[in-house]
Image 1 (cartoon, rainbow, N blue to C red):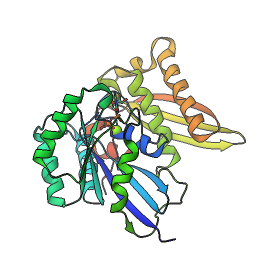
Image 2 (cartoon, rainbow, N blue to C red):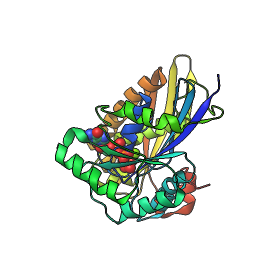
Image 3 (cartoon, rainbow, N blue to C red):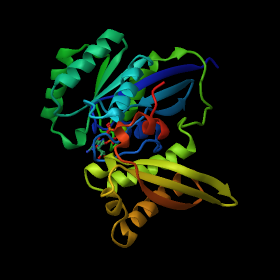
Image 4 (cartoon, rainbow, N blue to C red):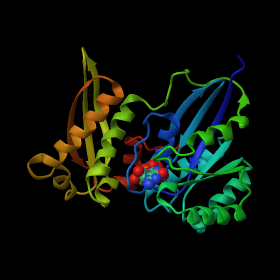
Length: 295
Ligand SMILES: Nc1nc2c(ncn2[C@@H]2O[C@H](COP(=O)(O)OP(=O)(O)OP(=O)(O)O)[C@@H](O)[C@H]2O)c(=O)[nH]1
Ligand SMILES: [Mg+2]
């Protein structure tokens, strides 16, 4: 069989549903999702091998104006992806208008010359009119290879994306084993699952200032033993994360453990610690320590 490959980047502003779409395309959850913007911090690779083609999807951090060094890192991760792929999947939300972020992005796509699809997401929450207006606005500003209204959450029209991009695949090797779904190491997935629970359980600013580091990840007999440190950036955040009588942290831990058991298919013992690292989001050294380092 002659194999083919296709690299695709998911690009868009925070919270449009890029990670939800990645999971929907793969039929497996490899990227964490939350209702808070700036959930994704690094590039996440999702792999789908179907018929003769291996699709490699790059989920990226949402495009925003950086407010700290972590934000700078996130924007480099997202920006670099455009130059490395065969096709861009540009996500917007039904109802979105073209602001300066969108204009800059469209300019970037034009300059790279890479085929770009417009995906109008969250159609399950929009009227036909909103969807139509969004399509007209964006189509006037850019010559998209295809325009597809989708619901990443319900899976509506997600298969259409695959059929539209399949012809763009070029003959070439598969870069990952046929049954891979991601290239993220297991430790990174474990840390991300914990971060998702922090985002889902804590209010606005606190989870954005957290980083999770896996200190131990060990399988013995039928048990996976995981010890993780949660770093927060203010002393006042620590008691909030732990909660009264440790209840909040217990809840975060049990939600994370359930997801880990599902993902790794083994019983998990999870041990969480909360530590403080003041202003780590603006410290180059600490960012590198936590694994945020541009190549
Ligand atoms: N109603 C509806 N909600 C959606 C849909 N897709 C995503 N969402 C919700 O939108 C929110 C953000 O989804 P994410 O997938 O985390 O968005 P993202 O673009 O990856 O966000 P960042 O990682 O912050 O850039 C979550 O609450 C999702 O459940 C959709 O098709 N319909
Ligand atoms: Mg995301």
